[in-house]
Image (cartoon, rainbow, N blue to C red; front, side, top):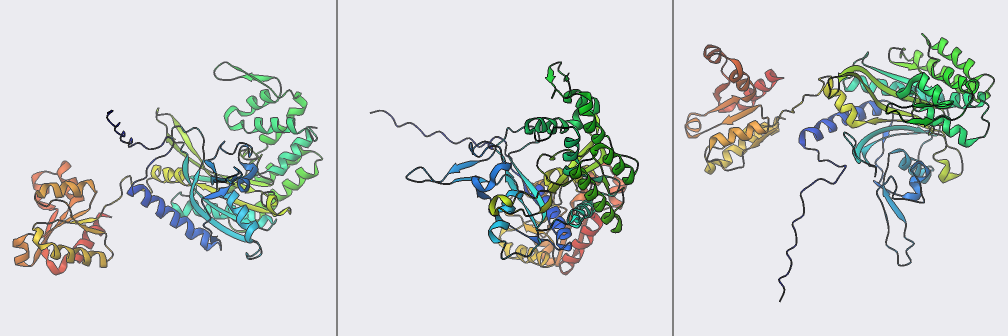
Length: 495
């Protein structure tokens, strides 16, 4: 009789494109999101938590191709005996679910409806360095008003958010553009309703930040050689047709009035272009009235990402301070948030146009920026550790930890094998604990405890002389009744 095959053990590996987040990272993200939520709440936005799963039909055209529902999303078909079950998918972003929620509950929601949402989204795309298939987004949107005051408010709120989480003024800039102005440029180019040509121009404009003015000009006309030496075919426009695009992309002037004047020249007689410039002017006026100058928010026509998606104003928050990449090259940190007006999204469900505008913050990128600025420590402080000198006195140690916790101090009792005291201190070190509390039999008999400042002790051990070590002791003997007060004093000094 053949031996039954052993079932192979599963491999303990993270699925490709995903990662695990441990305590410190989760805590940092939670704290940052709580801070952001506080700003949004102050602006009058309400929290919304929608399902992580939507029907592929509801996610809609803003995904790659509904006819191939597995493309770009993690999707599956519900079981149905006739093979006609609904296709379901993990949400791709937080905006498409908002459109479904508003369309479904619009009779019960206030108009305008102002909401913020935070949570993970999933994309079935090829992963790469720093690019994961699951990541966090943090969105705020206003649905149901066409007023430019809503767009100005989103920009102001984004500025306040960055400063509140720890990005100082001068290290960021919220830049604003308008899709209608670009539509006016396309009209001025004489493309009319030629959808293919318009899409080609949009794709080319989207490369402006990579190839610059000269590269865009070449791609719009005869084509260009890329960095690898390969030739990229151009759109085939004449130099005269390409000129409005170049004028649009390079129209930023020393002040808002100059920029708007340059844009008017770029759109020529186009009415939709003039409408877009009028909207930018309104946004600028409203922001100025609120005290948001060009050092925080500015009109900048070079903001082109997402112009194919949005229907009006678009905005992007860029961090302007320098960092060094893995090869030691200096570069700017770049964008951490983007958004704009999308007046067609809810229409898919209702048949009626519902104006909407909103912004999405890249949570992981913003966290990385805060670490770069030193606003978040590389290593979070762990709990105070109550060491165990006598396992038969566990009740005493539990009483200590309860006192600390009731005083709002993070603390734990060592629950491993207490036989080797050195292992307990190694554990505290691995937990990045600030303090270890020691109460052996002698301490118990004398009504005292030993409190060891682990952070100061580590600093002294690194560089102090014997004399300095004696002058700056890192272990204190205090009456048992003074436990909480002394621990708090040490923690305050460590901060």
